[in-house]
Length: 215
Figure 1 (cartoon, rainbow, N blue to C red):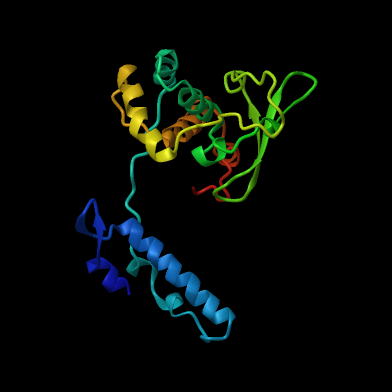
Figure 2: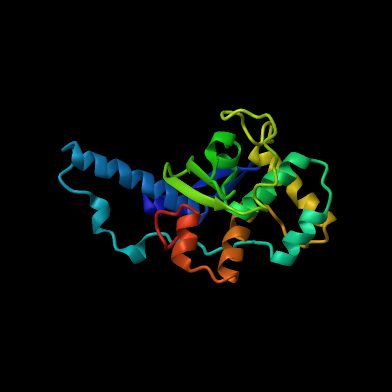
């Protein structure tokens, strides 16, 4: 199966291309899951995947993670953008590190404020199903609640992730930023700002909701 993956093709933009290494790894993980389940169900006595050496398996290509510097983020915030809701959501993610899938489902009831006026966000992440608790800065909570109810969506009518990633680069271009940004760039920006300002790696990992510090 591993040899097959190296030469197999799939359609991409109406043309056949070899399956990239990261996709090969995903397919191999799916097969491994099935084999493990077969062992649990006594269909197989052992998982043959355990006999394959790590160096024989496909390995991920390292990619550069794009992020914005604090100065670039300031320029972006000062640059008007025709989709005001997306601008607010992107900046919110820069200051708290939430994914698009979590922000699009965020309600006012997910945010609590203590007697000292400090805000904290409590959610179950859509991707990992892990619960996280995040302190929110004053920059993060500039969005006004007004008369909204507890179960009202904060960023109501936020556009899809695909459409978001199509138009965000136009905003960056208007701000004079020569980087290709996507919504996930906000999450990388948040992590990088924390590290730049001296927060330790373990704390950054927990604030991002990672289950493994290696991530």
